[in-house]
Image (cartoon, rainbow, N blue to C red):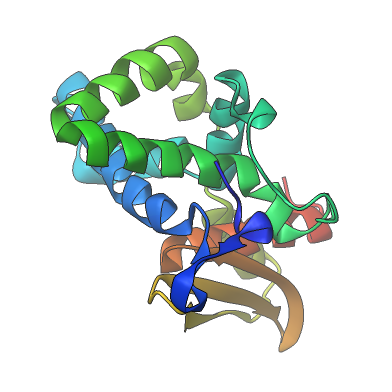
Length: 205
């Protein structure tokens, strides 16, 4: 539950935080949610399943889930972290992914899967509401740009820290003007994060 802003230095200069567990948990969570949806909707195509999975594991929804199960009260972070910073906005979802990663290391995939199904998805995820609520911000931006004859560009760069965990930064440009910047542990998450901020800036609903 230790955020990188409160990382403690260990031997050889290694900063101990939940980032490595977050990386692992992100993969385990994505796999378990994909399996759950695959079994629940046997007649839906892969496009539908991929879209609903992305809505469940996006940063905003993971933040919401983390608060629901009480992680907000036990996360360690630097008190100087600004509430409007990108790092602070993702702190709860990051911790939830780290928790899933820790459960996987201790108990394996079978128990991790059980935790995700019975402690997260079944009691806290309203699938009907998620299906009804289109939160694919990138699609919204693309549709808006086409409607208003605007040139849209997503520029994604990859960054790695000292432990070789990949992080991505996405920048949205409209008619060569920079509108927003987003971050994530995958290219898709970074683009969605940047697109969400762009929707907020341009008041796109």
